[in-house]
Length: 313
Image 1 (cartoon, rainbow, N blue to C red):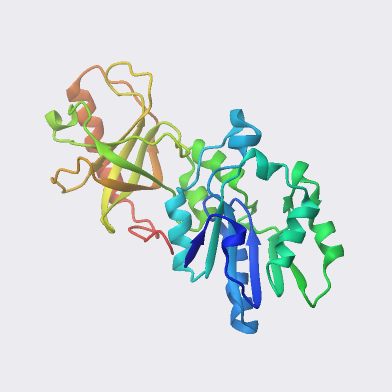
Image 2 (cartoon, one colour):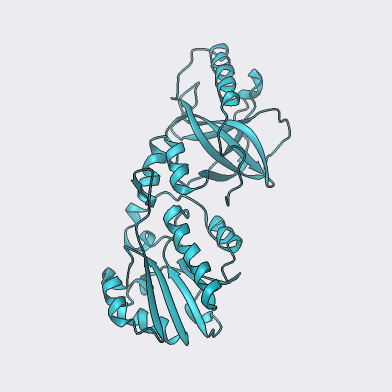
C-alpha cells in the first residue's frame, strides 16, 4: 500500500475507486465501505484509494470537543494495508484545508483521475462549513468520468452503528456490545512503564501503560487479552484510581496470567473483552489480594467466542 500526505502526490491512474472519511476505529459501517471498494475493483478494475486525515478535524475546528480515539493511526494504516487497499492519503487537516469550498475540493478530485468513482457513507459531508454533501455529488454524477455509490447506514443487533455510540458503550463499560459493533476487540496501546510495584508484593505483578489519546473504559476490572509482539496472553486489567491510596490520574494496570518476563519499554496492546466488576476500595493488602484471587478465577472461567482473536478479524 502506498501512503501519501497530499492528494497531488498520487500517480496518475486510469480509474480510481475512492472513499473519504475520518474512519475512527473501522467499525462495521466503515468496514462495509472498504469492502465495497475492494469488490468494485474486483469487478471493474482500477485502484482503490482511501482519503483520510493524519489528525482529527476537531483539533482545528473544535479543540475542546476532540473525542477519544477508538484506534491509533498505526491501526488505520495496518488495517487498510491488510485489506489490500492500493493508496492511502493521510491529509493534515489544517485551517487552510478547512477553508477549501466543496466545489473547489470536488473539482480538484475530479481532475486528478481519468475516471473516478466515490463510495461514501450515507451521512458524508465535505468542504468549508460542510456545505457539500451527497445531494451535490449526485447532481455532478455523469457516469462517464465521475460516478457515485452511497452506502446505507449499517444496523447491528438493534443498534445503528456509529463511532459516537461505540465510544459511549466503552465509557459505560459495555465492551461486549462495543466489540460487536466494532467487529473486533477494542484495544488500547501503550509503552510499558514502571509502576509502584505494589502488585508484586501480593503475587499480582502488573504491566502499566499510559494512553492519553484513546477512549478509557469505565473504571473497574476487565477480562482482557494482552498482545505482545503479535502473541496473545490471557490477562485482567484494572482501570481507575489506585485501589489503595488516592491518585488523581487514572491508571491502566494489567496482570498477565502465568507470565513473568519484564516488559519495561515494550509496546503492548490491551484487548478488552468483558467487564468483571466496579472499582472497589480496600482497607488492606490482604483484602485486595482476596478480591484479586476472585477476579482471576472469574476471568479464567469465562469462555468468550472472541478469546485470543487477532485485531483484523
